[in-house]
Length: 423
Image 1 (tube, one colour):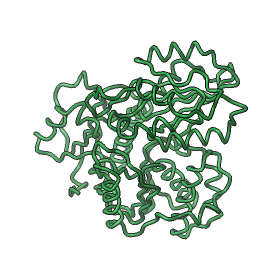
Image 2 (cartoon, rainbow, N blue to C red; image 1 turned 180 degrees about the vertical axis):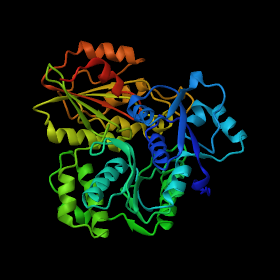
Image 3 (spheres, one colour; image 1 turned 45 degrees about the horizontal axis):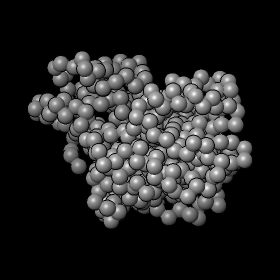
Image 4 (cartoon, rainbow, N blue to C red; image 1 turned 30 degrees about the vertical axis):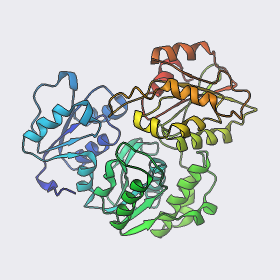
């Protein structure tokens, strides 16, 4: 972990400022009185509009010429592939250059950090816990990889001693924290582009646990204390149990914590109900991009919409060639609760194209798996472009018996935004 004297940082330039995590850190820098600017490859209103309103100058990659002067340069990992030349220019300035989590680790040193880690459930658990601490009067600072509906942001500046933060295991980024409390929701094989195997993943979590003062990883006893939630699924009840366990550790009144959970309405892109069309089709968007997450989200939807009441159509965009390839068989089996599965081209993000894997191959594998839903209409189909997928979805003429879900960590949600008008 790098050392950084934040009192000497007056100007920060963010490379990939539109990212959901790094934009939260940009807001944190603004809250400290720092002058913030950044570059992004496209306009992402969800993250950039509030930054612009705060006076942040955002340059688009195609328009960028000279690198602006700054005391600190912070980059998103994705920009090691999207704009490596910009990161290199920053390094040539001789000023500190850090990835998002290295910088966040420096900002975090001034707080008692509550770090939420785990393969799945980080975002929702972070948001649930943040709301509990707010309702309990602890006034936490919060950094989360989504927009929490309670404060409509991915960042909340508090005056209390706690920082609630989502701690990502990718590239061992969570090792930039020395948490006061660490939560581990679960551990599975993922990010196999930077981990050798499950044992390598476990070793990273072991190190994270060792550098944490207090650990919460077995919280099943709190499941019975989870109240009726507005967000469906066993996985969300487990997330809530983890949040209750932290609340108990902090001596927060359990009734206060439970009341907060009852009022929790979710976060952006986490099984988020977007609304209904005038034809009566219910539209959801979900960030699930791992087989376990897909399965859990679809099971959650089936709690709300049983098979004899609604047909579920999923438009899924696989995220990364490496993940799709490593977990191929699990992906093929994860859509059993869907009636129709539509696949977009793989979102490659930080990788070079791998011709040995494709959405077409995944569709074939899905169609070869035993199908417990004989009503499935059309099985699984892959599309070579967003435009072809959009045309096909339009042709379905979905109605009141349908639930349509865009799913994935990429840009599948754009299809629903383009096609459907929510009333």
